[in-house]
Length: 193
Image 1 (cartoon, rainbow, N blue to C red):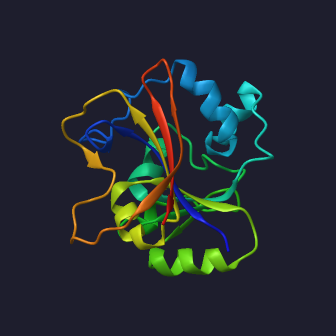
Image 2: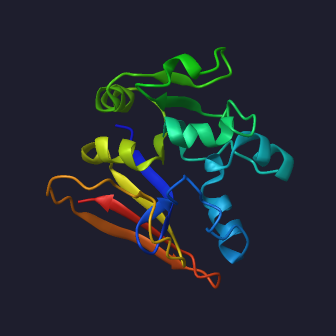
């Protein structure tokens, strides 16, 4: 069965973006960049990977899931299909009429994300990457098999949390690996117990 992996950058205080969706406080230079790109080449946007000569053919994912706000970051700069090398699914209930159409663009759906993920897990293929955001991650918390957190050495103070607050429902994960970089970024990988 395919795994759902929530792979995301996060601040020390648990935010994946600032209050207006900003993520520019996270370091994009340093010794962590090459190591992370080599380990997760399929999480690099298609056009950037192509221009940087990054081979995405051997990655661990073949599907990416995004909430509308995560997807809209690219739309704001004219990128309507950020991960063309993957099957892209964008979840929204309020922006269905704003999505670009066409075969090269993501599937934009108002469907229940849990039902979609359960169906995706039954298909043959590689892993499913949950790219963001926090609201979608909260909806899918019970389906997440693996967490890969790029903990950045910054405090945002406010913003979009890794998971939205909800009811108390502990879920335990075991550490697979932890790598600390000189940049201060710590890459931690955890699997559901």
